[in-house]
Image 1 (cartoon, rainbow, N blue to C red):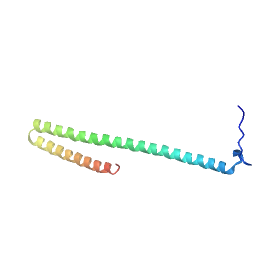
Image 2 (image 1 turned 135 degrees about the vertical axis):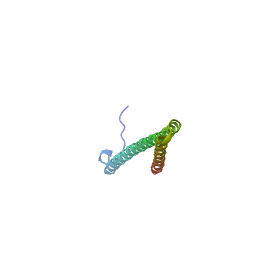
Image 3 (image 1 turned 90 degrees about the vertical axis):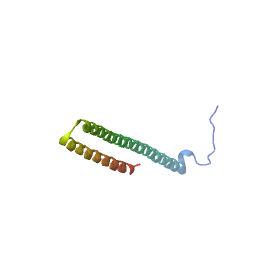
Length: 113
């Protein structure tokens, strides 16, 4: 097999200014697209990670609510008298505050979804 000789007229690809300009622009466009793709992927991962953290916080807050409810039931059963009333009143207030914080957190979290 021999070498093929193509006729480019009086121009060769090596000396073609239009081809060099096309190649340069093509490489620049490819570079921009690759960077944009990497940025989009990393941004998407960051959003996904952030939402995972938000979900974990929400779960923990609800578990705290459940724990307080359970403690309140046990305190109401085991404590009697003035101490019981004071402790139970404080627990009810704490439970109410945790509930309100959960609602605020969910409202805040929905602004990112």
